[in-house]
Length: 248
Image (cartoon, rainbow, N blue to C red):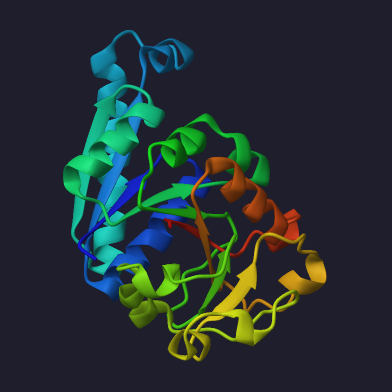
């Protein structure tokens, strides 16, 4: 990994996701790119006299956050402040800087499932989206739990996963609906946790996950990603597991 793009609106949840991303970047040895977007509607909403005023205020917030992340975690931080809409600017910038992962904060499953920015990003086919809930804390070697709509070779073929395994380590098997034998290669079966997102998952299953374990979903459609997340995280008490969405 070389670049992690973090979208921020300077909310508490967004700050937590930026800290999570900074700690991940520190462990992975990559650069952090902070992006904040705004529209003229924001100028009116904040009772600013002009576009330069809102740019100055938000640039100051961006600088403060960037310095905090650099000072505390020693990561290289690039700052970008752009007029426009997040749903347009995030995928455009992600492609331009060749971001390996795009990090977004979410405070509820409703946001994850139906938020305009999230839906647009999934539709544009971003290769890796990391959704960080408000209670998530980055923990090195916390492990990963994999979810797929269909079993196959996606885990073995994904180029990002070997790099993430060096940071997160591996996890235990979670298999409420499928036997281990149904999973592809033995090398994969021995070092990752695998579950099926096709069947409903209830809280007793969620309880098997380790604290702050990274949840990885493979999907080809935004709707299946949303429903998979809803299966995994069914109430606010479970909002400590970050969700990484990988295109199959």
